Amino acid sequence: MDCRICGGTVTEFLDLGRQPSANRFVPPGRAAEEPLFPLAVGACGGCTMVQLTTEVPRELKYHDEYPYRASGSALHREHFARAARDLLRTELTGPDPFVVEVGCNDGVMLGTIADAGVRHLGVDPAAEVAALAAARGVRVLTDWFEARTAAAVRAVHGPADVVFGANTICHLPYLGSVLAGVDTLLTADGVFVFEEPYLGTIVERTAFDQIYDEHVFYFTVRSVRELARRFGFELVDVAPTPLHGGELRYTLARPGRRRPSPAVEQWLDRERATGLAHPRTVERFAEAVRRVRTDLVATLERLAAEGRRVVGYGAPGKSTTVTNYCGIGPALLPFICDSTPAKQGRVVPGARIPIAPPEAFRAPYPDFALLFAWNHAEEIMAKERDFAERGGRWIVYVPRVQVL
Ligand code: TMP
Ligand code: ZN
Image (cartoon, rainbow, N blue to C red; front, side):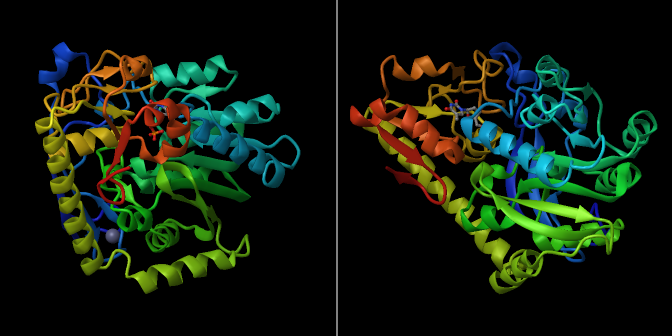
């Protein structure tokens, strides 16, 4: 296929089979109707961008009942409150500043901006999450962020000092339109700040569960720098953030308006040294992914043969990739507990594993718990200390399958 960014040739390196849209948690009766799509990733020989080879239509992904809640963990709430405070302190300091967020979800970041009385607008196509944001005082436009919407926002609200996105920019296949929109919106000295899953972390930790239909792109510092250049921006800063097992936050500005941080070159050097996005590196990653599948299925089958009870903990989109790729269904994992009400009573798409509220975890405790929400391990293990104290064991599969 042709690269969505530069038109170069994308070479596939990992095929995760036919999969449903990861966050379409459906009532059990409707599960059979859900469409499946090929899930595979490749790297562009031109601009190095790693990307999905097939696209799921956006209306299937970000529908009105889109169940993901960015406020679902203390980790996210604290991180985004801090991100908002940082923006207020560093970028939103002029007279009557204005910030636009691409995909504001339930207002986890903009809530703090709204509390500070600063002008803002969230743009999010999913009606239920947008309503949650509005209920906490966040101004939301229920739509997709692209060149068209950016022009409309500018016409009504004027230019923005910051355009922000978190775990949303890599979701948008039409990044050219997004960056054209950012160009329309930003003031001369404005910045586009976004934080997204990092290919370096995914490869280093074999975190293949980050690969699902919503994540169209898997950024590296190099591919983001190319992307920025191609659409008239400059990458001026890169910083690690702790979400989803380790992400990077990128800052883009208009060329020559900001002095680039030394971090940009440092990250590029590191990527050169590790050969990230090099065909050999991604082939090795694909092998490691297949090994995790073999080990995880073998572990669950062994425990089942021994008559042990195993349940899942946390049903993020990541759990859809893992269960469908590994062929794990209700026979190996009778249910997964998750704290998100919008997921409870539904089933994991494709794998059709029922999702239960967290209380089901304690009634009674299973022998083993497969931790899908491994990026929240600290928070969850602290909350469920009693499970481990009574002899319960956690199973993790990142960076490799381990029974803790
Ligand atoms: P995320 O990693 O994409 O934020 O998703 C985490 C999922 O795990 C989300 O569906 C909520 C769920 N979860 C729990 O069920 N219990 C918890 O204590 C935490 C932190 C998350
Ligand atoms: Zn390319």
